[in-house]
Length: 246
Image 1 (cartoon, rainbow, N blue to C red):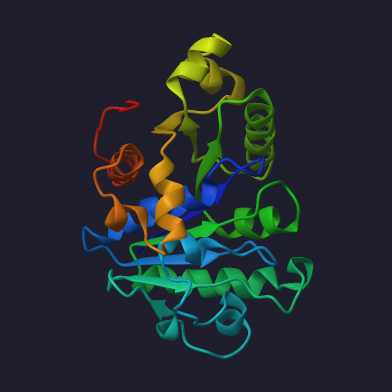
Image 2: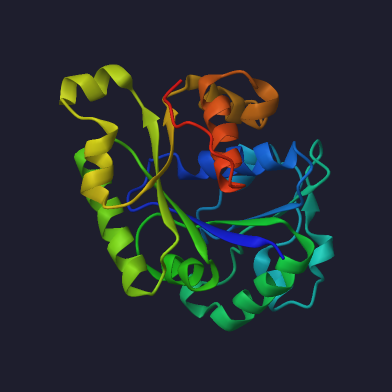
């Protein structure tokens, strides 16, 4: 059976959605069956990072409560093993039935190797929806003090909810800025209190690829961020890939 990952961040602007898309496409290019679900109700944009903004398709609410089969989820135009459900726009997240959402994802585990839930930033209702349904988590932070503090708080809340498989990704890392801050990745880990799943360098290619409606791995497959996404994807599979910035 497949695994369900919640992709979370305490603070907006950490690059969480781009990371979610990057890891998902890295697994899909290996042939794994992958389902991405945009859970950011009202501010959905995972389709842009996936290169699926023209694909349309069902929302997760259409499947969990609307009677549509999961098999009708939108198929990626260039990764045939990658499917996508967008976030609904016609209902507040607080009025979404978490049991029906979780039931849908339990069924998805039979058809997909990996399911990624791109949660909204913060710890409101969207966080509760995703944290209840997922069993593994990637908590995305930047290297700024506010982002690190917020990540630590999200980690604490996950622990209170009985979630143990939580790993940290330090995203959009600028080596020169870290040096100026007199900060190391170990410092970030210590403050967040979580083990490290990966480091992703700042990479303008992420923004440029999205502006052209292309997933980064297809637009610039040898870019620093693309390489980092592939390394994290391998670690998720259990391979002992070294953690490095470049």
